[in-house]
Amino acid sequence: MPYKILCGFAAAILCVLTVLPQARAFSPTGFSSVERKEATEPFYIAMLFYKLIDYRPDFTAWITDMPEYKAMPAIEQDMYLDEKVGYFKSLFFDLGENDPIIVNVKTKISPYSYEHGGFFIESFRPDLFFSYEYMGNRFAIIPTDIDSYQWYQVSQIDLEDTGLDFSKSAPVEVQLLLVPSAADSAKPTQLGDYEHWVINATVKEIQIWTPNSERLLWVAQKTAGQDNTLLELYKE
Image 1 (cartoon, rainbow, N blue to C red):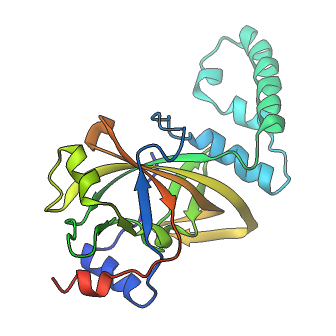
Image 2 (image 1 turned 45 degrees about the vertical axis):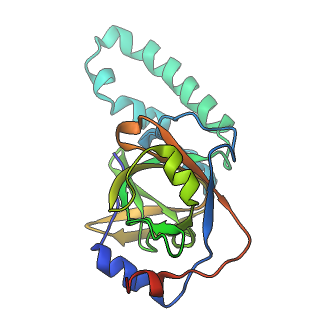
């Protein structure tokens, strides 16, 4: 599963005090795609990376390294290989380079500030990335504009409509829709404990769900530029 590099909540606050991002607002009906989606699989991420750098992988090598292929009787392997190679080629050529990547994140939101009308999402920091492994290679999706989505404005009325208590830090699940913008094929980048081939992406949509994805709370959308009030918020 994807994972993310996070420092402590206090450190995250310090990371954004020097550059205060625009506020974001939530809307329960701002987008039509409010159904919970399946997370993008490592297999797709690997294909996307190679598509972005205009390189066709050796699908035969991929398939012959699969456990299911190795476990087959030799008499069945040739037919399986031909079918799978054709299937992989079709997927690769039909893959849309601008199709959103779906990432699910378990995180927390800060206590709601009734004075400033919003809250802070803990893990949306500039060093956030999502790691995938496929066929011995590691790939990282880096949402390059995620720090612009750290602070959210939401009205007290909308909070009351949820029936939940936001007076203290609360766990949430976030579904990110990220649009790939570029891939770096020059050399892998050290991220965390491993080197990764990097895909940069930008945020298209953010959905905030209750834990266990039981209920959609809000869908994020951009608003006109507004100053962030984190300095005052965290003096409370």
